[in-house]
Length: 96
Image (tube, rainbow, N blue to C red; front, side):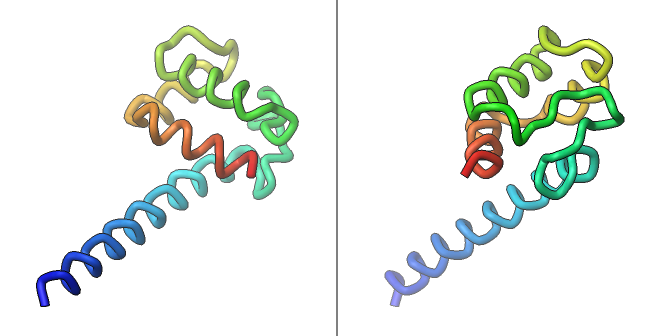
């Protein structure tokens, strides 16, 4: 019986984590477009044209305050609570 609960616990944790990541990506889509095809506020790079490595570099740079120009403060606030693992997952979801 405990194995069933353990398995269910893992499945539930995975589902919650996936839903949480989807909500974080939905926030990105608010400015960058559903397919990441837009320049956010007419100023940013088009994310769909960036490589996975460029997305990770940008997000980590925004988090550290070392990347960006006009969008630096806006993006810094969006990514400051993301872990490196979450940044990697976001980049992987964008560049499937």
